Length: 250
Ligand SMILES: NC(=O)c1ccc[n+]([C@@H]2O[C@H](COP(=O)([O-])OP(=O)(O)OC[C@H]3O[C@@H](n4cnc5c(N)ncnc54)[C@H](OP(=O)(O)O)[C@@H]3O)[C@@H](O)[C@H]2O)c1
Ligand SMILES: *[C@@H]1O[C@H](CO)[C@@H](O)[C@H](O)[C@H]1NC(C)=O
Image (cartoon, rainbow, N blue to C red; front, side, top):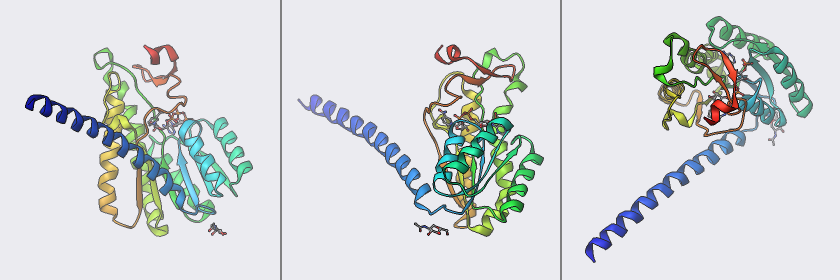
């Protein structure tokens, strides 16, 4: 009887723990979304990297609906032009699009400076640009081809933050970092992606201590969200962007 009691107690504790974890994850996601848009962003200046598709594009639309001025950045100009046009239609007073590669430090400096010289200041930086290398470690013929994960996902965020820092400090602004749950949930073929996102999370957790109250930092760690990325767009072992839904399902 005693054994059964102990067993039941253990089962209940574990069930409760798992439930609690999910509950905490859910409430923290809701809290993140609420706190992001609790602020009146009407007329504020928001720079979003990787805004030509997926999460970045839709974050731009949410800001636009709430009347924010936007600078949208990515490498595909034709997509940015469309996103900017939609943002203006749905409520953004002014939108600029700037073509840039976040893996290049000089591009980051240029798009931050261009935004500030156009709008006069900067309130939010959303660092979202990212790629997903998908490959088993042993299948890489040339390991240097995995480096865009760090160059874009990690260094791209760092460079943008580096150049935006002074402006955000002045405006008591915010940085919204799109990391990923893969920063702590691991799956085969995502070693470099996970590592880059874990680096992003550690980096911005540290900055939030360093910045104190000067600049708000929100780290968002989404699970799976249907975008070009989950439609099978990934960085191959040759570092080429490919679209292959079958690979994703394999
Ligand atoms: N979808 C998910 O399930 C999921 C889950 C967790 C986290 N995330 C994260 O969410 C972010 C957005 O991903 P997504 O799912 O929306 O995928 P996506 O549709 O592929 O969007 C990625 C965006 O990043 C841009 N980008 C890529 N490399 C860039 C570079 N070197 N310089 C500038 N921009 C660059 C892309 O634009 P260009 O190609 O035009 O440059 C695109 O706008 C990523 O950081 C991703 O890791 C996604
Ligand atoms: C939000 O801010 C704008 C610009 O400062 C102001 O005109 C507007 O009335 C504010 N809206 C609310 C709901 O406070």
